[in-house]
Amino acid sequence: MAEQAEIERILDELSVVVAGQAGSLRETLEALARFDFWSAKARLAEEMDAIPAEIAIDLRSCSWVRAIRACPEVSSRSISGSAATTQLC
Image 1 (tube, rainbow, N blue to C red):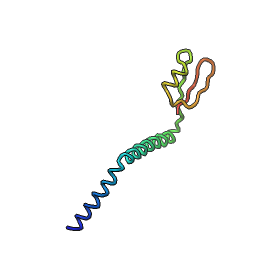
Image 2 (spheres, rainbow, N blue to C red):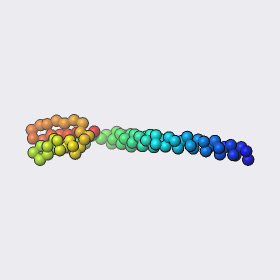
Image 3 (tube, rainbow, N blue to C red):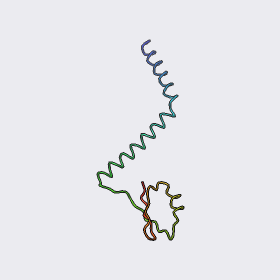
Image 4 (cartoon, rainbow, N blue to C red):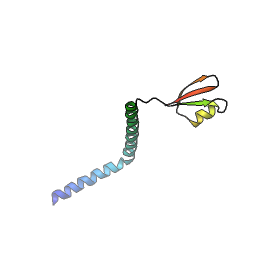
């Protein structure tokens, strides 16, 4: 009986300590979930022998300012003639 009460007391104390770190633990869990997601995508891309997508933007109908604002992940761009090719990360 006394042993069970001691176990419960210790578990209660540990619960208080863990609850005090709930915010940090939640952030860490979310970061690990994002890492797991990107890792799974990378493994699948490797298995599929995939390549990054390319989006062609016609400069006559779309300015770079609007394109970059709409798509902040733009990592590189090259312009040839009247069209630009934008590779996203």
